[in-house]
Amino acid sequence: MKDEQSMTDTLDARVTDFITDVLGAMGLALDVSLEETPDAVRVNITGEGADTLLRRQGETLDALQVIVNTAFRREERGDRHYLVDALAFRKGKDEELKAMAKSLAEAARTSGVPQEMGPLNPYARRLVHLTVAELPGMNTESIGDAFLKIVVISAQP
Image 1 (spheres, rainbow, N blue to C red):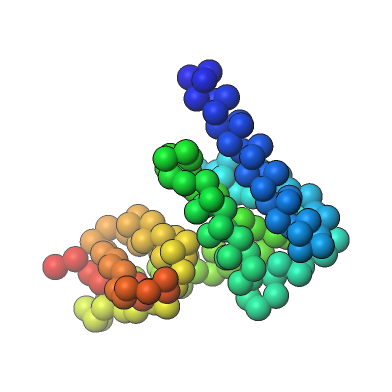
Image 2 (cartoon, rainbow, N blue to C red; image 1 turned 90 degrees about the horizontal axis):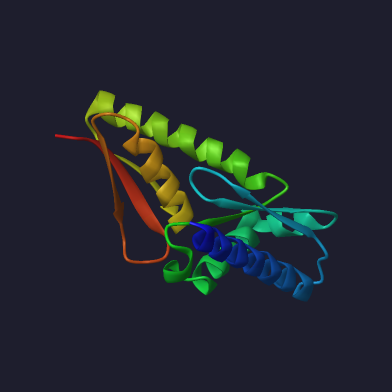
């Protein structure tokens, strides 16, 4: 266990350094901290100028998150996902997305008509799948072959 913890600490330090370097290359000197959550390792970015990462509906955050999770492959990080956030922007968006998924699930249950969400990036799709999985009798499916896919929420037959 001690070796596993040491590897995790080393990986987290490398991720923090990597993000700090990327932000530095963007001309941003921001604070980067990690926080363990039940679903992921939250990378919190704060400081003056962090709002730059929130432009265009947080596309830079999405890109940085994809880069981090790609650069530090699954073999190295296991089931841990890194969630990149700045100024708690993603926390609010995540709650909105979960509420929308629950609302559409209820509409699908009531009407019997499958409901669509999207197109969504991989992180948003995962959040929708996990949210709907908590609801008894409901099912989700990702449709499409591109980076952005549609999630169909339906009642189980």
